Each structure stands twice: as C-alpha cells, then as structure tokens.
Image (cartoon, rainbow, N blue to C red; front, side, top):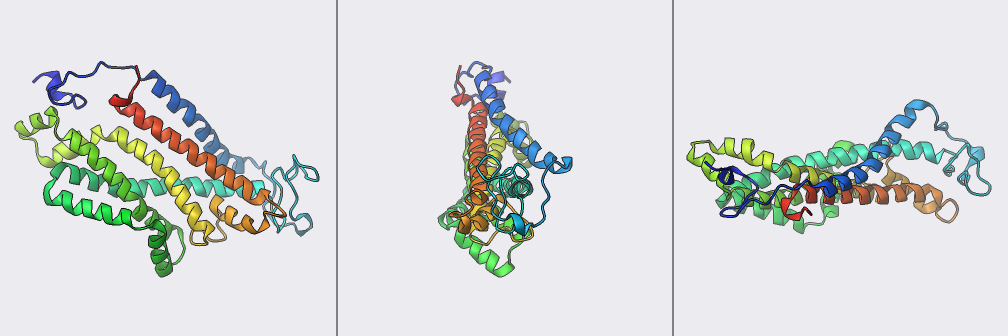
Amino acid sequence: MSRLELDPVAGEGEVPPPRRTGRRGRTSVFWLSLPLVVAAVAVFVLPLTGLLPEAGQDLAATRRPPGFLGGGSWAHPLGTDKLGQDVLTQFITAGRLTIMIGLVGAVVAIGPGTLLGLLAGYFRGWVDRVISVLIDAQLALPFILIALAIISNRGSSLPVLFLVLALTGWAVCARVTRSATLAIRERQFVFGLRAAGASESRIVFRHILPNLAGTIVALGTLQVGTAILVESALSFLGLGVVPPMHSWGSMLASGQDELSQAWWIAFFPGLAITLLVLLVNLLGDALLTHHDPRKRRR
C-alpha cells in the first residue's frame, strides 16, 4: 500500500502537501507559552519562599494604596483591602485556585466532549443524530441558567463548579471533534485498516484518536480560558468560589463596592483575568494553526 493511502494528512485522490517546518508556528507557541509558564511558576512558587507579606488582618492599615502610589507602602506592594489584608498575598493565593480551576475545568469538558464527538463523527447514523441533538440543545441554553439550576440544588462548592464547567464546555469540544473525525474517517488509511480487518474500536482509539491529538490539545488550551471566564462570572455573582477560598473572580466581586475608595482591590485581579485569558486564547489559536497543515505558512 502506498504512502499516499496511509498518510492521514493527505486527502483522497490528492497529492500530499510538502512537509513544512512550521518554524513560525513553533516560535509563536513558544513566545505565548513563556509568560504563562512564568506566571504559573510565580503563583505556585512565591508562597513557598516566604517573601509575601502576612495574610492576616490589620485594621490599622485598611485601604492602603499600592506602594508605587503616593501614600502607599512597599510593605504592601499592591495595597490592602477594607480589612487591612495584603492584596498581593490574596492575589497570589487566588491565582493558584484560578489556574487550577481552569486546568481541571478544561479536562472535565474535553474528556466527554472528545469521546462523544469521536463517536458521532465516526459511526454516523443514529449515533450522530442523537449526539448532534444533545449538542444543539446544550448550546441553545445559556450557561448561567444551567449554573443556577445546579448550584441552587447542590450548593456552591468546587465539585459542583467542575460539574457546571463540564456541562457548559463539552458541547463545543464535541462539535469540533466531530467535524475533524468526519474528515479523517474518509481518508484512505481508514479504508485500508477496514480492508485489513481491523476492528472498529481499534480504528477509532488507536488510529483516529491519535490524529486528533493536536486538535484536542488546542481545544483544551482554549477551554482553560473559557473555564476561567465562567468561574469568574459565577464568583462575581456569588455562585462560584465561596470563602474561605479565594479566586480572582471572587476578589473582583469583593472589590466592586470599593472602586471609589480602593480601586486596586478589583483592578489587579481583573487585569490578571483579562491577560491570562487573552494569552491562553492566543496560544490555543497558535496551536490550532500549528497542528492544521492547511493553515501553516511556508
């Protein structure tokens, strides 16, 4: 059997595109990954160094501005809140939880979404129709209604939050995976495997799924940003992370009433959410471009 028939990249009856180095794509991925890695290391390593200010309350130092502003002190580089707690310490602690929620939220959405999309795209027929109806039904519902229904019944906690992230994120992953699987199942290497007597499960999980790895990684990266935004929105409404835990979304919610007197309480977590989601989405787009041969530049 020729290489053309076994090449999962080449379409039926067309000459495989020349191999390209993808140097620009790799460079973009590197430079977008670098600040994310630095931010993650800072968030998880700084608390272990003992360099952060104390996390306790100090009612004699309430609403102190950041150290780089007039009237501020470098003992509290990002200022203090209405209880005299150091904003930088809260910011670092909340960042760890926010990043963890983003990563776990991406996993719980990618897992079922990839499986259902893979089954729908490969088996077609009634399996595809049922899963497509479920995808359309989920996408038609605003995520806030799903969150309200679940949280009002089960209460606010991290497991409930992960359940909400899974239910609101799987459909997009399933739709993209289904589309990619539809294209792969019609290629010559799949026909060759069937003719050789390979079982359906072997074709799906040993051959088609590995060809979806790049798409899945890119989807997972994009889903991290989506999970962070969903958690921040829910925490802002009082439906997400609850005390004594803190996330950037809950810090944003607690600082909304202090904007006129202590704007820095809400500004820094809001800025961090914006930059983190922007970088994660750009990284996801770069990964999609890098793993899609049709989008690579020479």
